Image (cartoon, rainbow, N blue to C red):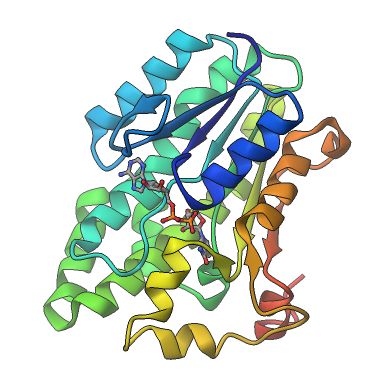
Length: 260
Ligand code: NAD
């Protein structure tokens, strides 16, 4: 296959919507998910699964056009360590592995999916551990949080991973730019998927989600967010690199109006 767009977490929510959007404009799509409806079935919560995902995708398409590191676990998860594995290593390892193959394709690019949770903020020490590849230190911090509450540990793990993902994109603008590969980040707000449904039906978490300020629209379908990801993957955004765009109806600008 030629010029494929590789999407992690393609079986549901944003990944599924993006697969439809891109297929409808004639792009080749290779979906990776732990769910059986994907082209490549791989569990990104393990190093083996991440390697399998990358090598299988490259077997199908040695010179991909683009990669979207989208798969993510919700903050509500019985094992917050799995959130670190999927939402951080499942993004970082996958993107790192695809840099060279993408550089072989003129116009190669990638998008990482962060979250409005990044603007709300994570744990500074945990974020530093993730960015500095001190994963066992990161797990120790999470272990302490877990002793207090599994819900709190999940929220801290989720928001810290999402900050780290956005910072990864900023920090790698130079390296990726030198290789001719554009790298950007989309940070959704309330997006109408199974993940949001789960959060809104959780007694402890729902009030925080409901309290997010609304600029123009409270929530949007996954296809609205997919349209923005598709723009970042298109030639129309060929001068956009190293950017983090909140696609959130304005929530982020209301939370921190002085950040530009
Ligand atoms: P979703 O739960 O609807 O879909 C996530 C997909 O990722 C599923 O198909 C799932 O099987 C896959 N996945 C999860 N763990 C995996 C693993 N270990 N290996 C392989 N695949 C795995 O979620 P969504 O709402 O579509 O979220 C997509 C992205 O957007 C995530 O990174 C999420 O954090 C982010 N996000 C979502 C919202 C929201 O309101 N829904 C808000 C901000 C950010």
